[in-house]
Length: 329
Ligand code: AMP
Ligand code: MG
Image (cartoon, rainbow, N blue to C red; front, side, top):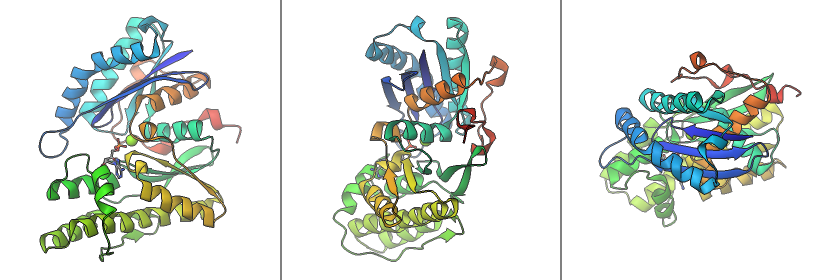
């Protein structure tokens, strides 16, 4: 059985082709990069509408299959930006109807967790999901994936991108901030905002920009931003592991590509006699393969959707999704 997965919750459009063994035959991503400013949802949606056909063709070519070989269409149903979600869901419905194959809507956050479990072979992790829009600590408990901590304002990736925009580092700024941070020597004081199991980043952004405007070095600021925010999310993830009695931490989302984050979280896990797992970068960022793989898990465990069930959910909750493939736990 071959599943075609379409991802389009935000600025990235993804097409993945995955089979029942979890073999990823294709996983292509086309990212909307606004020439100036941040992401405008309508512009990102227009990008997805324009790019989906060529990206789909390239994915079929890479997988060496034809469209009619597809047995299942999966798409990201939420959470995400409304115009982007609707554009990609429309494409998924059109494909499902014209190919006469089932369609399944996937929870994007759960897809990050499931592709991570699949490729890293961890079993029952605490997922630290750090992307542009999302910052969440997710794990399995009592029959559902649940959120144990999250950002109270902006996502960690968004903090890096907003800081980058103000200091002249183009979007997405995370990778360049990581490089500049290597030259930082001094840890500058920035607010460390952990509230129970939750974190907040907007005050850190303001403080970092104030320091930049008063002449602090960009190298020191990038270094300090990483040290402070990564320590915050590592602390919350560790507390979730302790409370849940779990010894695996899994990273997901674009920020999970960062080497310093990987180092910090793996040291934390080792000190707890646990282990850190991180998928390769192409499977950390938003991608179609994770949607296809989670769609296969849903379909083969008996979940079905009619076209009328495929309405997108901008605020889809992690614990609203059934996960019958884990029901034996
Ligand atoms: P996603 O929303 O999951 O596709 O991830 C995109 C986000 O990840 C953007 O905010 C990027 O700035 C951020 N990002 C990507 N690579 C890195 C990196 N090496 N270090 C920190 N952030 C990163
Ligand atoms: Mg994501």
